[in-house]
Image 1: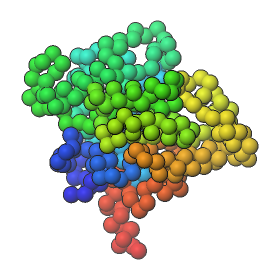
Image 2: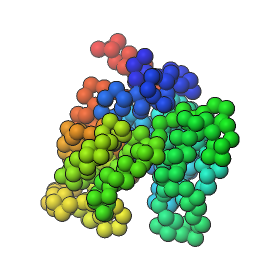
Image 3: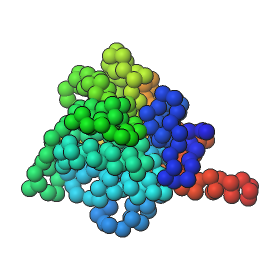
Image 4: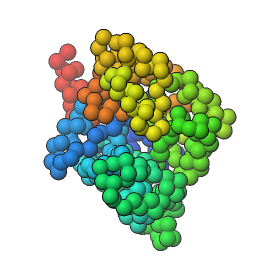
Length: 339
């Protein structure tokens, strides 16, 4: 069975030798194919169609869809609920788990519950502080951090037990991920922090936005020097900018985002800034895909999700590949019959 094949939704693919999950994302990455993931902006709604309509804009262009977990400490539909809806019709979600809002009892329950629904990918995050979100009066939990969460997830999967030591009768078969920021200060610590996450159990990482390829190259060289290449799949974060003003606001107000002056200047001189922002993203993807140690890109197009298809198509990174989506095989067959 090819890595992109998909049986009836709800019935998992077999786990291949050397894999820890039945998920398509792990299959794509371990095959050496350049992977593409994207983030779904969760709705402020209880209508399932609001999730499905947001997922459909990625059809045929991404290998997995991140369901964010209160990103920026703002309240939206939960990651667990978004994943439940996506797996119901066969999408491959990445369930983000933030340590900010739940203790280890609730988090371990979510890992089991997510795996039971067919979620094969889980991204372990410490989480943004509540002071940055729309409920600053909320009480933060932070019973765990991303390192301890990774260790617990790995123990549940490989050791078949909860952190308490109690046995799990059917272990969660999951592909564990974490976040990485090659562009945060102090720069010299970034690769070492990644090494700690890999040691804790991270099998893939999705990075913060990359707008500085030379700095990314330095990070990747440090990663190689630490012997991490081949031990973790690195998906580099990219995203379109709307304008020079928006880019300047991001680098000033969002912790960990680095946007060089040259990018701001390029955006400021553009006749059509939004179009130029997409071109910047395309140029970055094409340059990034050639770098040793990069396994894919993670597209974060907040409130610009409709641009992801254009960006990925014009970048050419998928070549002739069409990632699976509900109805893909039927549509391809119909196109062949009418050709």
